[in-house]
Amino acid sequence: MSHIPNHAKKMFSGVIFDTYQWEQTMFDGSTATFEMLKRMSTVSILATTKENTILLAHQQQPHHDDFISLPGGKQDPGETPLQTAKRELQEESGYTSNEWALYKSYKPYNKIDWEVFVYIAKNCTKTHPQQLDPGEKISISTVSFEEFIETVTVTSNFHGHEIVEDILRMQLGYKDIAHFKKQLF
Image 1 (cartoon, rainbow, N blue to C red):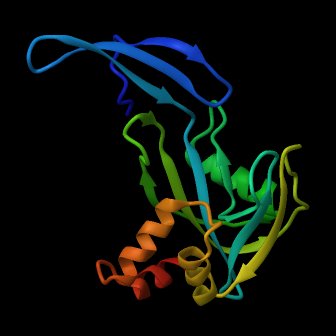
Image 2 (image 1 turned 45 degrees about the horizontal axis):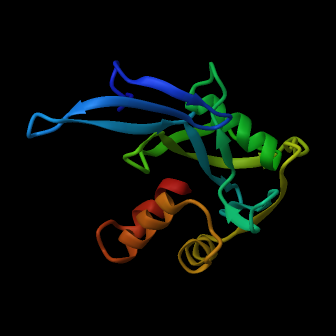
């Protein structure tokens, strides 16, 4: 569901972001121009293997510091989020799965109309070579659940703040981390 009003006007179309503006009546009756960005949804995949490990993507991209993330990427026009997750997992890692479940969806920023879908892909197996985009260098590693938790919460170059926040909340006792582990395996 879009948070951009129907009467908003697209002011700019970019490669990733479109910019919309609209007039908004304020509480005192005056008006102000509001602005919001829109982008395609993205997916991240909590991919686990039959050996009870989790896949991590070590990435290099032009004009970015190296980072660690879950496999994932942007949704192409006409794709469902699940189709995107299956495609991105195979392209970035060469792994596939027949066991998929939506873990959670996030709307990370209130000024960007954007949804991040996080899927769990269980019992992943290596079935294909990687098919990376020209601007990607990705190496895949497998880590234990404990190593995953440490990487996500301690490593400063892990990208995926939604997962980081969830795991930190689990560690604070707001959710059960053992339940999360059962969801993955």
